[in-house]
Image (cartoon, rainbow, N blue to C red; front, side, top):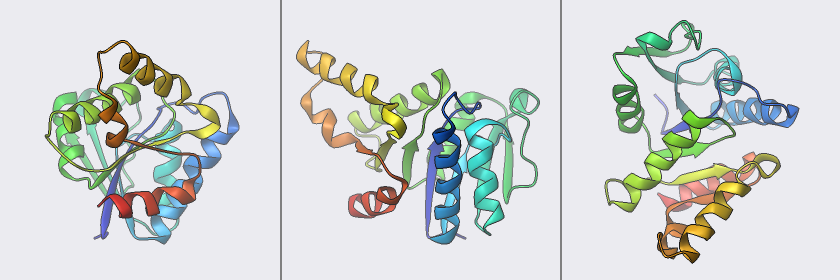
Length: 182
């Protein structure tokens, strides 16, 4: 079993910039090379599938957790190390949380955003102290970071939110940041 498990939230599509896919692949390769287990949503498609395939291709460990109703839509990746089928999105998210030492958000859609925000909310409420990172590929997360600043300026969020997440621009920055935070 891996020494460290990182939950990766990312899109079930690849987006419209090829750098998203190449970065997801590089991330998966790096995880395998450094004995970092991937915990993710269990799908075969999009950035999720690219990252999981790269981990598997380089001999790493992948835990996928997918709700029964998404097995067809996200095309469950049955060949990974450990595919767990659960009954609901809530169970999926809780199990992903339970199996992870850190959280990393790559580009994605509403689901990726929701899962990332939930981890930030749980951290803000003192429910966990795991590292949360945003991999800001091609400035993808800039609008969210700007929104946080807007919320701070309007008095709805404390500036302490900055301590709850780390923004990185390169795959190579991820593991040093996680290890420094653990």
